[in-house]
Amino acid sequence: MTFTAQIKNVTFPDIIYNSSGPRCTTPEELEALGNSESSAIMMKSCSPESRNGNPEPRYKEVELGSINSIGLANHGYQKYIEYAAELKQQFPNTPIIASIVGFSQEDFLLLVEAFQNEPSVDMLEVNLSCPNVVGKPQIAYDFEVSDELIAKIFTVPGDKPIGFKLPPYFDPVHTEMMANILKKYPVSFITCINSVGNTLIIDPETERPLIAPKGWLGGLGGDYVKPIALANVRMFYKLLGDRMTIIWCGGIKSGVDVFEHLLAGASLVQLGTVLWKEDVACFARIKREFYEYMEKKWYTDVKEIIGKLKEL
Ligand code: DHB
Image (cartoon, rainbow, N blue to C red; front, side):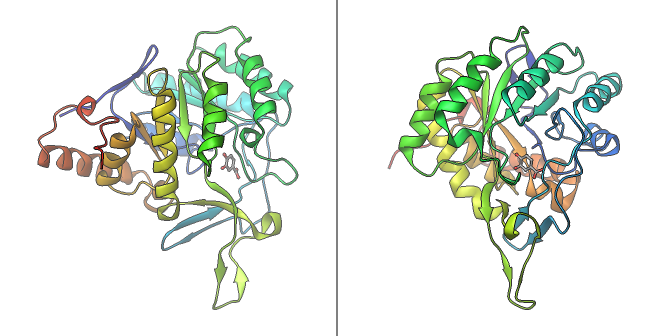
């Protein structure tokens, strides 16, 4: 059994790959993804200049998930163009995805143009939802600013698929507002959800928070966020599923999780916290579990389940 997915001209050999964030910043980490069963190589969100990110400790795992405030540590977009070119030579059949983030509209436009012009990059995920930069709110919570930025992004020439990484929305009215903006543009996909931003985890033993940056607040991932991610995928699938691909990210750690998200409306899934915890071996394990669950239920094609959540 093999399951593939297509976004515009980009063919994914399977439907499970890495989210931008964990283990995708350095050339070694990216190569390890290429050598794994990940169906694509997603690169760490990059900015125009390289950044060291926030002070340590800035990532911690707990039983139910993870909290992070990396603060966009990355090598700067020019390095990711170089890395992509090397990766493409080594892994010609694996889609390479650039994740881009900026601190101004000009930054975003510079990066979109640069990656649209780089032949080894297949697709662009524009991050509108980084919660971890002090003093910079998550763009996609400001609908006017998002609308203006998305409009400008689509004025940049290029035919690579462009999609947006969205934060979790907690009210269907907000989901609908964002969906109405996205509908106006040739958006190829959305990725739901980024980590649940600005959360606090306390260690009762030490009586201290787990991470240092931003007043100890960080983005939450893992089990904690799965139902939030499911709700966002479902809501966006109902609003936009006929126009663009919905990619799920947030709380997957088993093949059954993948199955649930496809039912909710996702066509592809990204692994975050589980990749941090288990390293690249998680792709083969989760893929195997997903295939086994599909077989157990007598399904042979993902099209039979995508969006097919039964009514109550
Ligand atoms: C970081 C975290 C995010 O959730 C994101 O979308 C981009 C960057 C970070 O802290 O590095």
